[in-house]
Image 1 (cartoon, rainbow, N blue to C red):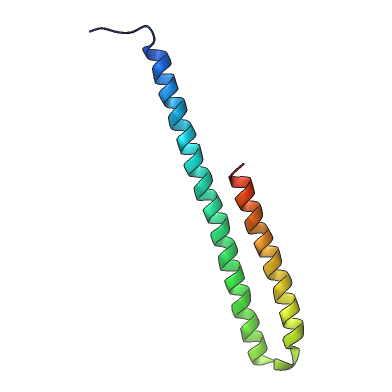
Image 2 (cartoon, rainbow, N blue to C red):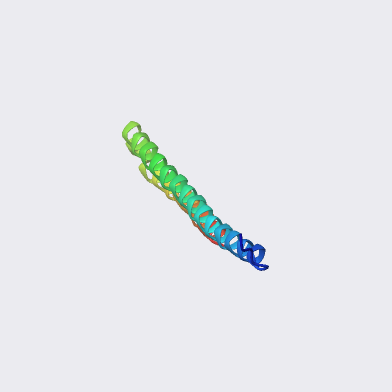
Length: 87
């Protein structure tokens, strides 16, 4: 059974490469989860804004302003999640 003196170093190299690949996959999954949350948040805000305008058409401009501000905040958190997960 031949053994090499460098087999331990080779195993460490493979483990290091495997850890890098797993870290990259985990970063991609977390960024996708953050962006999915932002997409769901924007959809919910839009849905509720349409319901509110349907109930009270006179307040459409106030509802529109509030929903745009809410969507901007949610999208900002989604972009933040993207950049933090890929760092």
